[in-house]
Amino acid sequence: MTTFSQRAALAVAGVFMAVALLASAAPAADITDIGYVDQAALSNLPRFVSANNRLASYKAQLDRQYTARTRGIKSQSDQARIAQEFQNKLVAKQRELLGPLFGRAQVAIASVASTKNLSVVVDKRIVIFGGQDVTRNVIDLFNGIGDPVPPANTPPPSSVGYVDQNAINQTPKVKKANDDFVKFQQEQSIAAQQKMRAAKSDADRQQIFKDLQKTLADKRKQTLDPVVEQMRKVIEDVARKKGLLLVIDRTNLIYGGTDITNDVSNGLK
Image (cartoon, rainbow, N blue to C red; front, side, top):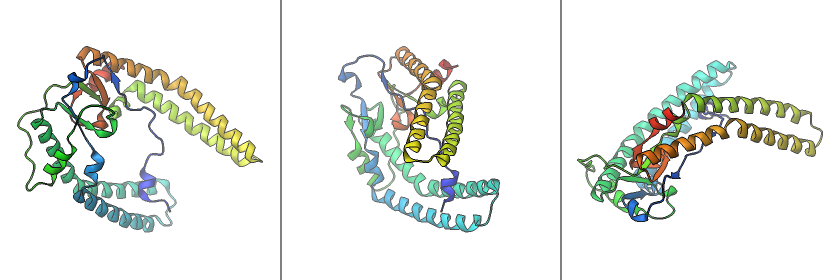
């Protein structure tokens, strides 16, 4: 049975990957003010586990209510309206249960970063070598008695920049390329499904699938690759002008960093 959250979710995967690049060669000593946190370890703390379990229980309850509510409803618009209503309830509960914990963790990270004179803290998943692991310090402060005290000072200037990829994807040039590809992908998928139904053998169906993959790959090369390449060049140019050693996606940043999203957006116009 399809749940409301499945109906409300977008089926199309993102086509632009997070960008990370070195703007110039630099010795390791230049980036010793970078720390990292294992967010998976934070998510396994008892408070987070308990909150997520409560959220999962609430979602299961909403799924049952959604199924009962939409039983017999054939109008897609009514189904979409109800799905959005239940999705909003789930988001509100998530904010209620996890919001305070995320806030506490963020203050703990900022406090540890300030104490250790770190200009930026990133997710451990993107670190291969170097940086300071402050996970244990953050956990100890998060689990401590009372609320962590936020630092008095703002993060110092950082040689690590970041880009909000979601905002970049909404710039006219990038959005048009993405929308054009998604539309083409949907049209070709429908056509392939019709061919599949008429296919008489597994070999025919495999060939149809291969043809679809090649058609989409060719379209991606034509529609998306030039925009992605331009985006990378703009980011690299902005990074060099600002003297940044590294640029990462906003989703991998936890604390500090230099926001170059607007500069990149302007460069893509």
